[in-house]
Image (tube, rainbow, N blue to C red; front, side):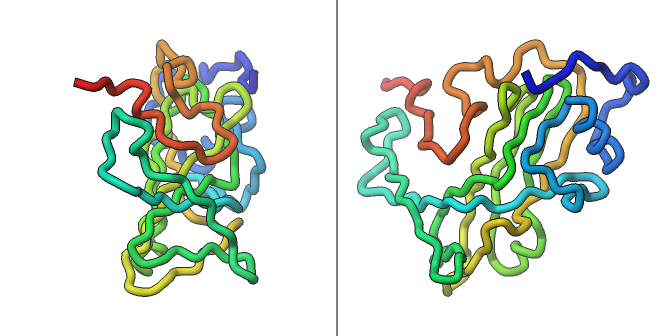
Length: 202
């Protein structure tokens, strides 16, 4: 287990977003796992995450039935260009992992948001909620959904800051996310959607 049995007794009544001091303290006491960790990425009320080195384009061949895995879009690996950049074509949806592996205790909740620098260039970076207990065993990558809304390609740089992870202290959840069926809590790379595992045909 990555997480110690230490508790935040001195902060038991505190609930809300973690600031820079609390983020560093959470990592030190085992509530938060980040690997590799760069102290320069700790911001006043979030932890910045970097773009991983792999990426996949979602390419559909037919109408997608979410309950039928055989109709799901293909994950097509994208090679970096000669200068090590990720080329995102106009209108393309790319799935890419974070550089960091993340682990949250059952007392933390995360929310991933894009960075305004990218939004001002027409690039959306989405991920959403990170549930309590995500990556508890050994840490896991977060899969980012990157969309280019421009008319021309956008060049992204693996290893560069790409999004922010806001962290919230909360009452300990009864169940860890990793204990739920069909979860992504142990992913070490981008994987295909598991939605078909829990959506049934009519």
